[in-house]
Length: 238
Image (tube, rainbow, N blue to C red; front, side):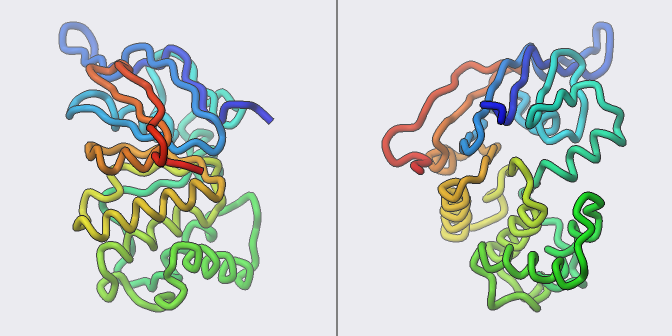
Protein backbone atom coordinates (compact mmCIF):
# COMPACT_ATOMS: atom_id res chain seq x y z
CA UNK A 1 0.00 0.00 0.00
CA UNK A 2 1.35 3.44 -0.93
CA UNK A 3 2.49 5.65 1.94
CA UNK A 4 0.66 8.66 0.52
CA UNK A 5 -3.02 8.70 -0.34
CA UNK A 6 -2.56 12.07 -2.05
CA UNK A 7 0.56 13.27 -3.86
CA UNK A 8 0.59 16.49 -5.86
CA UNK A 9 3.76 17.34 -7.77
CA UNK A 10 4.14 20.82 -9.26
CA UNK A 11 0.37 21.18 -9.52
CA UNK A 12 -0.76 24.31 -11.35
CA UNK A 13 -4.04 25.70 -12.61
CA UNK A 14 -4.40 28.61 -15.02
CA UNK A 15 -7.71 30.11 -16.10
CA UNK A 16 -7.72 32.00 -19.39
CA UNK A 17 -4.71 32.87 -21.49
CA UNK A 18 -2.40 35.72 -22.42
CA UNK A 19 -2.43 38.92 -20.36
CA UNK A 20 -5.80 37.99 -18.84
CA UNK A 21 -4.60 34.60 -17.54
CA UNK A 22 -5.26 33.93 -13.85
CA UNK A 23 -2.74 31.65 -12.13
CA UNK A 24 -4.93 30.10 -9.44
CA UNK A 25 -2.31 27.53 -8.36
CA UNK A 26 1.43 27.87 -8.86
CA UNK A 27 3.40 24.63 -8.61
CA UNK A 28 1.83 23.05 -5.52
CA UNK A 29 3.78 20.16 -3.96
CA UNK A 30 1.68 18.31 -1.39
CA UNK A 31 1.60 14.87 0.20
CA UNK A 32 -1.13 13.55 2.49
CA UNK A 33 -0.75 10.23 4.28
CA UNK A 34 -3.62 7.85 4.84
CA UNK A 35 -5.49 8.68 8.01
CA UNK A 36 -4.45 12.34 8.20
CA UNK A 37 -6.83 15.20 9.06
CA UNK A 38 -5.62 18.28 7.18
CA UNK A 39 -7.09 21.80 7.23
CA UNK A 40 -6.45 24.10 4.26
CA UNK A 41 -6.65 27.82 5.01
CA UNK A 42 -6.03 31.09 3.22
CA UNK A 43 -7.67 34.37 2.26
CA UNK A 44 -10.23 34.69 -0.51
CA UNK A 45 -8.53 34.12 -3.86
CA UNK A 46 -5.67 32.13 -2.35
CA UNK A 47 -6.50 28.99 -4.36
CA UNK A 48 -8.20 26.90 -1.64
CA UNK A 49 -11.28 25.99 -3.66
CA UNK A 50 -9.26 25.40 -6.83
CA UNK A 51 -6.97 23.02 -4.95
CA UNK A 52 -9.93 21.18 -3.42
CA UNK A 53 -11.54 20.83 -6.86
CA UNK A 54 -8.37 19.29 -8.26
CA UNK A 55 -7.85 16.96 -5.30
CA UNK A 56 -11.52 15.91 -5.53
CA UNK A 57 -11.22 15.13 -9.26
CA UNK A 58 -13.78 17.80 -10.13
CA UNK A 59 -11.27 19.48 -12.44
CA UNK A 60 -7.94 18.76 -14.13
CA UNK A 61 -4.67 20.64 -13.55
CA UNK A 62 -3.03 22.80 -16.21
CA UNK A 63 0.37 21.41 -15.23
CA UNK A 64 1.99 18.99 -12.82
CA UNK A 65 0.86 15.57 -11.63
CA UNK A 66 -1.76 14.39 -9.18
CA UNK A 67 -1.61 10.85 -7.82
CA UNK A 68 -4.65 9.70 -5.83
CA UNK A 69 -4.54 6.35 -4.04
CA UNK A 70 -1.67 5.21 -6.26
CA UNK A 71 -3.29 6.30 -9.55
CA UNK A 72 -2.09 9.24 -11.65
CA UNK A 73 -5.33 11.03 -12.46
CA UNK A 74 -3.79 14.21 -13.90
CA UNK A 75 -4.66 13.57 -17.53
CA UNK A 76 -7.73 11.36 -17.31
CA UNK A 77 -10.74 12.14 -19.45
CA UNK A 78 -13.69 13.74 -17.71
CA UNK A 79 -15.57 10.45 -17.82
CA UNK A 80 -12.68 8.54 -16.26
CA UNK A 81 -12.19 11.32 -13.71
CA UNK A 82 -15.87 11.07 -12.72
CA UNK A 83 -15.43 7.34 -12.20
CA UNK A 84 -12.45 7.89 -9.88
CA UNK A 85 -14.38 10.59 -8.03
CA UNK A 86 -17.37 8.32 -7.47
CA UNK A 87 -15.19 5.49 -6.18
CA UNK A 88 -12.65 7.33 -4.06
CA UNK A 89 -13.91 10.74 -2.95
CA UNK A 90 -16.65 11.82 -0.56
CA UNK A 91 -17.72 15.48 -0.55
CA UNK A 92 -19.23 17.63 2.19
CA UNK A 93 -20.15 21.21 1.25
CA UNK A 94 -21.17 24.35 3.12
CA UNK A 95 -24.66 23.93 1.66
CA UNK A 96 -25.91 20.45 2.35
CA UNK A 97 -27.37 19.73 -1.11
CA UNK A 98 -29.98 17.32 0.22
CA UNK A 99 -33.00 16.51 -1.92
CA UNK A 100 -35.95 18.03 -0.03
CA UNK A 101 -38.54 15.40 -0.96
CA UNK A 102 -36.38 12.49 0.19
CA UNK A 103 -35.91 11.29 3.76
CA UNK A 104 -32.50 11.25 5.41
CA UNK A 105 -32.26 7.54 4.64
CA UNK A 106 -33.20 8.01 0.99
CA UNK A 107 -30.69 10.87 0.60
CA UNK A 108 -27.90 8.69 1.97
CA UNK A 109 -28.88 5.74 -0.21
CA UNK A 110 -28.65 7.77 -3.43
CA UNK A 111 -24.89 7.36 -4.04
CA UNK A 112 -25.29 3.60 -3.62
CA UNK A 113 -27.72 3.53 -6.55
CA UNK A 114 -24.96 4.89 -8.81
CA UNK A 115 -22.23 2.63 -7.43
CA UNK A 116 -21.42 0.47 -10.45
CA UNK A 117 -18.51 -1.24 -8.72
CA UNK A 118 -20.29 -3.08 -5.93
CA UNK A 119 -23.75 -3.83 -7.36
CA UNK A 120 -25.45 -3.89 -3.98
CA UNK A 121 -28.91 -5.35 -3.50
CA UNK A 122 -31.73 -3.13 -2.22
CA UNK A 123 -31.39 -4.70 1.21
CA UNK A 124 -27.63 -4.13 1.29
CA UNK A 125 -28.08 -0.49 0.24
CA UNK A 126 -30.62 -0.01 3.03
CA UNK A 127 -28.37 -1.61 5.65
CA UNK A 128 -25.33 0.42 4.63
CA UNK A 129 -27.26 3.71 4.61
CA UNK A 130 -28.73 2.98 8.06
CA UNK A 131 -25.24 2.18 9.38
CA UNK A 132 -23.86 5.45 7.93
CA UNK A 133 -26.61 7.50 9.60
CA UNK A 134 -26.09 5.69 12.89
CA UNK A 135 -22.36 6.46 12.65
CA UNK A 136 -23.15 10.19 12.58
CA UNK A 137 -25.67 9.97 15.42
CA UNK A 138 -28.88 10.06 13.38
CA UNK A 139 -30.17 6.54 13.88
CA UNK A 140 -33.44 7.95 15.24
CA UNK A 141 -33.98 10.40 12.35
CA UNK A 142 -33.89 8.04 9.37
CA UNK A 143 -37.31 8.92 8.01
CA UNK A 144 -37.24 12.68 8.54
CA UNK A 145 -37.09 14.95 5.51
CA UNK A 146 -34.57 17.83 5.46
CA UNK A 147 -37.16 20.46 6.46
CA UNK A 148 -37.75 18.51 9.69
CA UNK A 149 -34.04 18.50 10.56
CA UNK A 150 -31.86 21.23 12.04
CA UNK A 151 -28.94 22.62 10.06
CA UNK A 152 -26.50 20.51 12.06
CA UNK A 153 -28.58 17.38 11.46
CA UNK A 154 -28.74 18.12 7.73
CA UNK A 155 -24.96 18.40 7.64
CA UNK A 156 -24.71 15.06 9.45
CA UNK A 157 -26.90 13.53 6.76
CA UNK A 158 -24.57 15.05 4.14
CA UNK A 159 -21.56 13.53 5.91
CA UNK A 160 -23.26 10.13 6.07
CA UNK A 161 -24.02 10.40 2.35
CA UNK A 162 -20.38 11.27 1.64
CA UNK A 163 -19.17 8.24 3.59
CA UNK A 164 -21.68 5.63 2.47
CA UNK A 165 -19.62 4.46 -0.53
CA UNK A 166 -16.57 4.09 1.75
CA UNK A 167 -14.36 6.58 -0.12
CA UNK A 168 -10.61 6.79 0.30
CA UNK A 169 -10.85 10.45 1.29
CA UNK A 170 -13.43 12.89 2.64
CA UNK A 171 -13.22 16.47 1.32
CA UNK A 172 -15.08 19.08 3.37
CA UNK A 173 -15.49 22.61 1.98
CA UNK A 174 -16.39 25.04 4.80
CA UNK A 175 -18.54 22.34 6.45
CA UNK A 176 -19.57 24.62 9.34
CA UNK A 177 -20.11 27.78 7.26
CA UNK A 178 -23.91 27.69 7.44
CA UNK A 179 -24.15 26.57 11.07
CA UNK A 180 -24.35 28.37 14.39
CA UNK A 181 -21.39 27.95 16.74
CA UNK A 182 -22.87 25.07 18.72
CA UNK A 183 -23.89 23.03 15.68
CA UNK A 184 -20.54 23.86 14.06
CA UNK A 185 -18.64 22.50 17.04
CA UNK A 186 -20.71 19.32 16.93
CA UNK A 187 -19.84 18.81 13.25
CA UNK A 188 -16.15 19.43 13.93
CA UNK A 189 -16.26 16.96 16.82
CA UNK A 190 -17.86 14.42 14.47
CA UNK A 191 -15.12 14.94 11.86
CA UNK A 192 -12.47 14.54 14.57
CA UNK A 193 -14.16 11.30 15.66
CA UNK A 194 -14.23 10.00 12.08
CA UNK A 195 -10.52 10.81 11.87
CA UNK A 196 -9.84 8.86 15.05
CA UNK A 197 -11.64 5.93 13.45
CA UNK A 198 -9.26 6.07 10.48
CA UNK A 199 -10.82 8.45 7.95
CA UNK A 200 -8.59 10.67 5.81
CA UNK A 201 -10.04 14.19 5.79
CA UNK A 202 -9.14 17.40 3.97
CA UNK A 203 -11.12 20.42 5.14
CA UNK A 204 -11.11 23.90 3.62
CA UNK A 205 -11.94 26.50 6.26
CA UNK A 206 -11.40 30.17 7.04
CA UNK A 207 -12.02 29.58 10.76
CA UNK A 208 -8.97 29.11 13.04
CA UNK A 209 -11.19 27.36 15.61
CA UNK A 210 -12.19 24.81 12.98
CA UNK A 211 -8.60 24.27 11.87
CA UNK A 212 -7.64 23.51 15.48
CA UNK A 213 -9.47 20.18 15.14
CA UNK A 214 -7.11 19.09 12.36
CA UNK A 215 -3.73 17.50 12.99
CA UNK A 216 -2.08 19.53 10.23
CA UNK A 217 -2.77 23.00 8.83
CA UNK A 218 -1.72 24.24 5.39
CA UNK A 219 -1.92 27.94 4.50
CA UNK A 220 -2.22 29.11 0.90
CA UNK A 221 -1.61 32.57 -0.49
CA UNK A 222 -1.64 33.61 -4.15
CA UNK A 223 -1.78 30.01 -5.30
CA UNK A 224 1.20 28.83 -3.28
CA UNK A 225 1.71 27.00 0.01
CA UNK A 226 3.21 29.49 2.44
CA UNK A 227 3.14 27.28 5.56
CA UNK A 228 2.49 23.66 6.47
CA UNK A 229 2.60 22.74 10.13
CA UNK A 230 1.37 20.26 12.70
CA UNK A 231 -1.07 21.40 15.35
CA UNK A 232 -0.05 21.30 18.99
CA UNK A 233 -1.14 18.71 21.56
CA UNK A 234 -4.84 17.95 21.25
CA UNK A 235 -5.21 19.26 17.70
CA UNK A 236 -6.62 16.45 15.61
CA UNK A 237 -5.26 13.93 18.09
CA UNK A 238 -5.79 10.28 17.22
